[in-house]
Amino acid sequence: DAKTTQPPSMDCAEGRAANLPCNHSTISGNEYVYWYRQIHSQGPQYIIHGLKNNETNEMASLIITEDRKSSTLILPHATLRDTAVYYCIVRVLAAGNKLTFGGGTRVLVKP
Amino acid sequence: GAVVSQHPSRVICKSGTSVKIECRSLDFQATTMFWYRQFPKQSLMLMATSNEGSKATYEQGVEKDKFLINHASLTLSTLTVTSAHPEDSSFYICSARDRNVWAEAFFGQGTRLTVV
Image 1 (cartoon, one colour):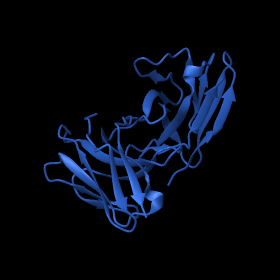
Image 2 (cartoon, rainbow over the protein chains, first blue to last red):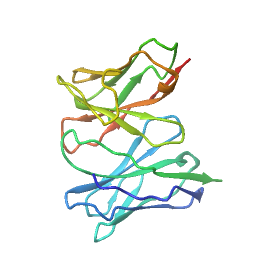
Image 3 (cartoon, chains in turn yellow, orange):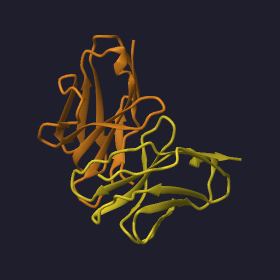
């Protein structure tokens, strides 16, 4: 799996949009971009994934650049419960293919 | 989303004893399950991948005789930490994926192991 680069930490204000960047400059054409988050002392939670089109679900939006070398996860209205470590992962969509976690971004939502 | 249940959530054991952690997929059949270990303030590190009915594939540096993995059914995988030592104290997390190649992985709530 290609590696990703994320800022180690960021703060954001409650009620505001949180924009989390991720670089994946060596991504292959068949690799998807996945986002997970891990709230303290819990297992990771799936957020969203995409290949090249922008995606949106009830939790977040995923914006992937046209060259696919970077992406941004957007939490539209951050709440205190969104405080977590957010992981950006790229992987080939194949049965049994593992997820390899990097350092992630530690997001602190402040009142 | 799909539910993966991990048990126990916390366990304290004495050095030299063995501990078994269970991971169950509650509403789907998991042909593949993954076991991770996470030390404080670090990321998840993959230990092994297990496929139902076959031997687990261990990542480099993970002792297969110390971390025994069994995936005997499509809904249950177990990780046994044998002859545990204080350095094995960690947060162990399992993950399961449906047989559908398009499915995302779901994670258990983790097991905090403390070896004293």
